Length: 136
Ligand SMILES: [Zn+2]
Image (cartoon, rainbow, N blue to C red; front, top):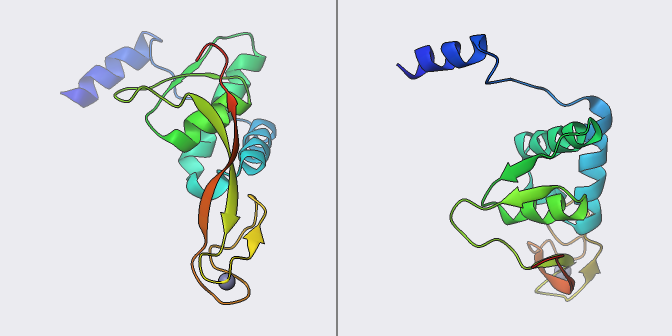
């Protein structure tokens, strides 16, 4: 039944399946690295963000509907609207500081490993500062 509905919708052009171009995927990755959320995002998450960027560049006004704080955080960074389904969404754009809870070594937000290079402890993160989101 849902398959039928899917086919009917795509025939009428109401439902479109799009894949983001590599350029926008790169932009999405870069933005998520900057805010330090890249390790919390799956490939599918990044594709959603990339697609939003692509549609925006084509003059559309896309909104990402998600309850994922990392997606919301990156969406805000690249000025894409997002709408939470259940939660109220984040009020601040967070910049993360990553650190080792054991030896206290600090890491940049885009550090690509999940464990401390000194002692091998799993890294934690905490907000390094926050910027109030427009209108929030
Ligand atoms: Zn350590």
